[in-house]
Image 1 (spheres, rainbow, N blue to C red):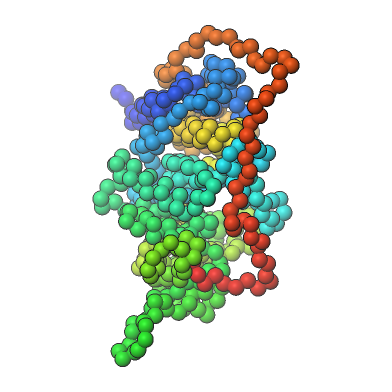
Image 2: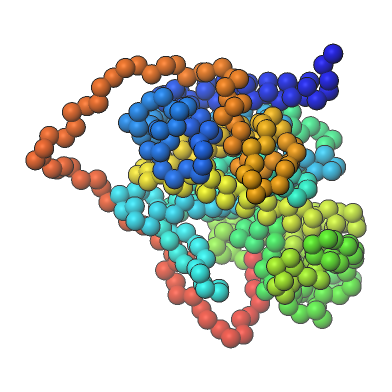
Length: 482
C-alpha cells in the first residue's frame, strides 16, 4: 500500500522530471552544453565563483570552451520557458490569492568597458545614507510570494532594462504578459480573488495601477513620507459659478492636522514588531501634471483613487527606531480585514531579497565576466530554471547539514540546503544531454601575432535625471504632484 507521503513525493518527482524535459526543449541551440551547465550550477559543492569552475563539476562532461560558446552563441526559447514557469505550482495566500512582488536588482559591471548597454545603477555605499551610481545591467524581476515567513519565492519573469527604458512601463508590460500566461495556465479563473502586486517606493504605484486597470490586478506599493495626496472634490453647491474643482483638500503625509479621522483602524500583536497599528483613509489620489511620465497624455489627466494605509510598530528586530510606513492600495472601501491583509502582504515583499542574495552569492548569477548583454540574458534564464528545479525538489532531498547546523525537516529546508542534496536526486532522473563528442583543442593564436581587432568599447548610458545635480535643502518641501 502506498502512503500519502509517498504518493505526494512521487507527484513532486514527476513534476521535477517533467520540467527538466521541458527546460531541455526550450534550449534550441547548443542545448546539451547549456543543460549540463545548469546541472553544474545545481550540483556544485559550494557557491559559484566563476564559469571555469563549473566546467570541473562532474555533471559537466564538456570542456570549458563549450561552456563559453554555449552562452555566447546558444539560444533559449524564452517565451516557452516563461509559459513553463507560469504553469508550475505556485504559492498562494491564505485566501487563495496570488501575490506577486516586483523589484529591480542590478548586475554591476563597473570595469566592463567593452560591454554594451550598461546603465548607471543605484547602489548604497558603506556609510550612512551614501548613494553610489555604478555601471551595470539592471534587471526587473517578478516573483510569487509565499504567505508565511520563508526564504522561498517563485521567480516567474526577468527582463533587462535597456538604456532609456522607464521602469514603470517595463514592469507594467511584464505584469501584463505574465497575468495573461497565468490565466492561460489556469492559475487564475473568473471568480478568483484578484492578483495582488506588491511594489516598493521606487515605483510610481498609481501609474502602475493605471496601466494595469483592465486586468484582474490590485496594486499595493509603499510611498515616500514626503508625499501629498488629494481628497475627492467636494460636491458642487447649487448656484456656484466657475469651473468645478477636480481635487479636494490636501492630505499631507508629514502633517497630521490634514489627515482627518481614519476610516479603519486596526491593532495587531506581532512577535517581531510588538503592537502593529494600521490606519487607512479612503479615496485619495495624487495630483498629476503633464510632466515626466504623463507628458504625452492628451486631455485631462486621470484621477487615480485609492486607499492610503499608515503602519506603525512598537519596535524592530534590529533595535533601530521604527519609522511609519505609508502604503497606497489601488482599490477603495477597504475593510479591517483588507487593511490587515495588505500590510502583512507588504512585509512579505522583503522575502525577494533572500532570493536575490541566493542568486548572486550562491548560484553565481553576477559572477561571470560576460561581455554581451545577450549572453547575460541567457545566463539569467539558466539561473531562473535552476531555481525552479530547486523549488520543485523542495521536500524531496535529504538534509545534508553541517555539524553546527540544526536539523530541519525536509519541508523547511532553505534553497541552499536543498541544493546540497540535489546531486543525489539528479542521479534518479534521465540524462537528457547526449554524451560529448571527442575533440581536440584548436591551435590557438600563433605566437608573436597580437590581436589586431580589439573589442569595441562602449560608453555608459547616463539619463537626463542623473546629469542634474541633486538639490540639497535643510527643509525639503512636500511633493504635491505625482
